[in-house]
Amino acid sequence: MEDPLNISATSRRPAALVAAAVVLLLAAVAILLAGNRPETAGADLNLNQNFCKGSIAQGDASSKDDPTLTSVKYRIACAMPISGYSLFLDGHPIQSLETEVFGTDPTTKAVVPTDAFSCNGTIPGYGVNCVGSYGGKWSVLEGQFTIEGKLCDEPRLNPVLTVATATIAAGKPVQALAGPFDMGRPRGCKATAFSGKTKIPKQSEDTPVTQ
Image (cartoon, rainbow, N blue to C red; front, side):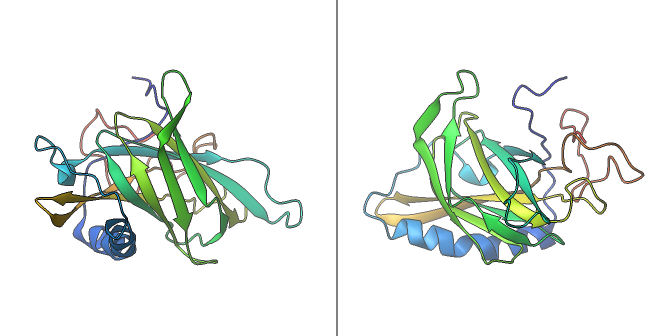
């Protein structure tokens, strides 16, 4: 079935990848908890069981000053709220990244003003870390970063996403982590002998990873 968000999904969570993603997100969660307006999680939400999807594709034209760089566009959507997310880019160090990311409604494409993130990362480095607010309900977050080389060259980029939510409950800080979620290999590239392979294997046929 065609994914209306054009976003891949998987729900397997290998322990090693979870540990790496937790390290990237702890600082972001701490910063959010230090803010002046923390949100309180709804009693009916288990944010540790949040489910997110993601995909990557060719982004806007890379910098004219450096033709060796390729822009990569990523799209993320989650069922429940988050206040931070991290992308792990094993083997493909980022050379630059967008520092502001906003959400859009998946149906109307209108900007969702309450879904906004500030992003940072070591340049060059293997992680993109973002802190902000997001209400869930499959609003689409879209950002970009650049890598060296061509997007469709093997071995291809295959990011892993981990999300975090920081809230205040009964006057105490509460942290929730979910993931990792495999965002899949780049969309729009021709198939190779490696097509269909991902960092996190599919768990069932209802969570396809599209090349």
